[in-house]
Every structure is written in C-alpha cells, then in structure tokens.
Amino acid sequence: MGLLQITGVPFGDTIQSAASASKTGKRMYELRVKTVFSAAHHLIDYPGACQRIHGHNWTVCAALRANETDQSGMVIDLMEFNRLLNECIEQFDHRVINTVPPFDRINPTSENMAKYVYDWLAEHLPESVRMHHVSIAETDSFSVRYTAE
Image 1 (cartoon, helix red, strand yellow):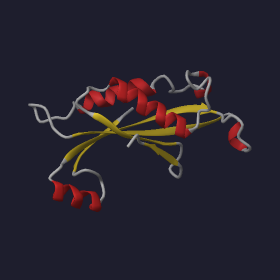
Image 2 (image 1 turned 180 degrees about the vertical axis):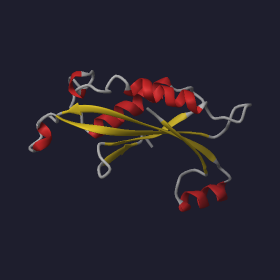
Image 3 (image 1 turned 135 degrees about the horizontal axis):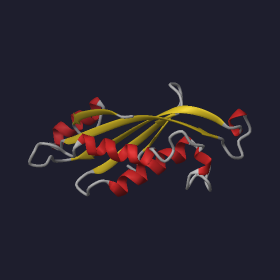
C-alpha cells in the first residue's frame, strides 16, 4: 500500500497560481502521498444500485503544504506522511465501511470519506505543515476532492 510523490509548487498547481506566486514572491511546497485499499460499503437512503452492498478498490491521495523546509531540506519525511495515511486507511481495508466508526452512524459516501481522512491527517501531522486536500476515487471515472481552503 502507498505511493509517494513530491512536487514543489509555487502556490498551487495552475499556471495562473504560479504567475501570482512569482509576483508576490510567495512560494510553497506541496507533498502528496497515495494509497489504495479494498473495501465494501452501501449508501443509505440512495435510490439506486449503490444502496446494495458493493466493493471498490479505493484510491486515496493526500496533499499537504508548507512554506519552508527543515534543516535537512524536507518539509516532512515522506515515509512518515505515507505511514500516517496508511494508518488512517487501514481501519477500512477489507472491511464493510458501514461497520467502522464514524461510518456506522453517517453515510459512507466518497465525500464523507474524503473529509474524514482530511480531518484525521490534519490532527496527526506536525504543526509546521497544513493539509491541502484529500482525493478519494472509487473508480477511475469517479472521484471526490475535499479541501478546507
């Protein structure tokens, strides 16, 4: 489980954002980690096939941002960021998500899953970095991205 990716991006990942960052002098690092897990769920009060239990090979990508690196030239050790993402996700791997708190009380939609992972990671990361977004894909065609910005 887990793929690592790091990109140093000026303020965002668009050309417009890069131009804006160049004008203001603000630069930012964005680090991303990615993992895949298998789990089943069923949607509550959904008028379609997804109300029945079904499974996915979920892909989760988490990104954080920081303005500076530490003395070693790192924002955070990518292995540690990856370990945290996998620690959060392992509670769902090869399970029925509807049985795992808090999804035993709330609908296990991709939207709710993305917000949960984002909040969990934000609580467990050092204060020197900040979460930027979490993307969750149920399939290659359907994904959700949650960001607090």
